[in-house]
Amino acid sequence: MGRVILGFGLLAGGLLATGAATAAGFKVNEQSAEVVGNAMAGDAARSESASDLFFNPAASGFMNRPQISVVGSGIFPHFHFQDGRATTAAGTPVPGINSTDGKVDSFVPALYGVLPLDLNLSAGLAITSPWGLSTNYRSDWIGRYYALNSKLRTVNITPSLAWRPLPNLSLGLGFQAQYAKADLSNAIDFGTLGAAARLPGALPGRQDGKARVKGQDWGYGFTAGIQYHFSSATEIGLTYRSRIKHKLDGTARFELDSAGVGATLQGATGAFRKSDANAELITPETISLAIQQRIGSAWTVMASATHTRWSRFDELRVRFDNPAQPDNVSVEDWNNATMYSLGVSYSPSPVWTWRAGIAFDESPVPTKTRTPRVPDSDRYWLALGASYQPTPQFALHAAYVHIWVEDADIRLLASDPGNAARGSLFGHYESRADVVALQADWRF
Image 1 (cartoon, rainbow, N blue to C red):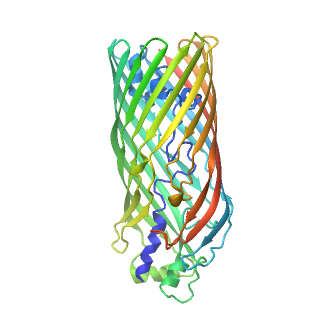
Image 2 (image 1 turned 90 degrees about the horizontal axis):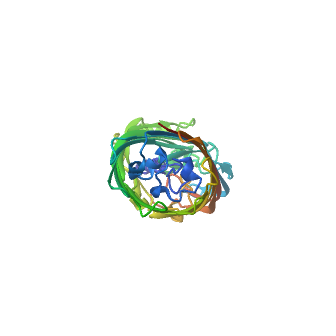
Image 3 (image 1 turned 180 degrees about the vertical axis):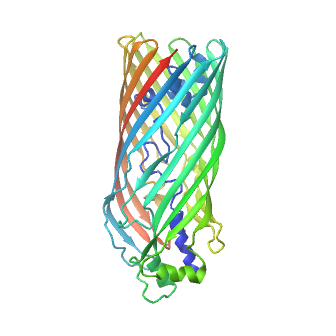
C-alpha cells in the first residue's frame, strides 16, 4: 500500500502553471500598450508615460508633471495538443481524446501614477500583474493525470522614488508587495493505484478521481534602475527586479472514484483526505538593458535585452499537513533565458505616432521536463502600435501583437521522478497567441 503515495505526484505537475503565456515561462509582459507596440524594445530606457514605471522606476525622474496611465490587455492564446499517446505505469493505454485545446483567454489590467515632489525628486506607483495566465483541459483527455485546470494570478503593488542628481541622470528604487494565488486540478488514476495495491476490481485508467490544490501568499522584493540621457536624442536604461519568494498556504481536496477504489485506499492509508498544504513559489529576478536613439525629428529606433533567472525553478515541492501524505517533489530544471527586442517609432506630427517591433523570446523549459501545464517553447513577436495625442494633457495608445511559438513535444515517462501515478504521456503542441493592448494617459 506504500505505493499509494505516488498519487500525490499528480499534484506537483506545476503550482506555477500558466499555460501558453505570451512571454516565456509564466511571465506576462503586457503592462504598457506603448511598449507592447514596439515588441518591448526600449522598455527600460523610456520616460514618456507613467506606464514606463513598470520597466524602470527611474523613469519618473524625467517626468515634470503629475500623470496617470491606465492599461488593459487582452491575451488570446491558442495551443493545440495533438498526436497524443498515453499509458499508465503498467503500460495500459489511457482512454480518452488525444487531440485537444487548453487555452484560456485573459485580461491583464495595470494602473500607474507619477507625482513630481520637486525638481529632483518624484514618486511613482505601479499596480500590475506581471506573472500568470491559465489553462483548462477537458476532463476526458489522455493527459488528465498531468493537468486539468491551472491558474496563477499575481498582483504587484510597487511604490517608488526617483532622484535626479544631474539633469541627464535619474536613479530609481521601488518596493514590491506581491500577492500570488494558485489553483490547480488533476485527475487521479485510482485504478492504477488500486491495481498496484492488488485491490480486486481495480481498472487502470478507468477509475478516476480528482485532486485540487489552492494556495495564496504575500511576498516582498524591490526594483532598482538607472536612466541616462547622453543627449536629447540618445537614452539608455538599466533596471533590476528582484526575485520574490512565496509560501503558498492553502488546501488540498480530493474527489474519489465512483467504483470505491479510492475510498478503499483512503480508509487503508489515511491518504486522499482534505488537508492543509503549502508549496514554495519564486517569481524570478530579471535584469533589463535598453537604448533609444532618435533620428531626426520623426524617427526613433530602440533595442532591449531582458534576462530572467528561471533556473531558480529547479523543483516544485508540495507539503501536506496530513502525515499520511509525504512531501512530493517534481523536477523542473528550467534554464535562464533572455528576450531580445528591436523596435521603431515614426511621429509625423505631435498628434500621431506609429510603432512596430520584433522580438525573440527564449524559452526556459527543457523538453525533458515540459508538461501540459506549461507547454512552453521559443517565441517570435511581431508588434504594431499607434498613439494619438490630441492635447498635451491626454493620449491614447493601442497595440497588436502576433506571437509565433515553436512547435513543442511532450515526452513524459512513468519512470521519471514523480510520474508513476500519472503514467507516460507523449504528444505535440502547436501554439500561437494574439495580444490587443489599450492605454490612456492623463497629464495634469
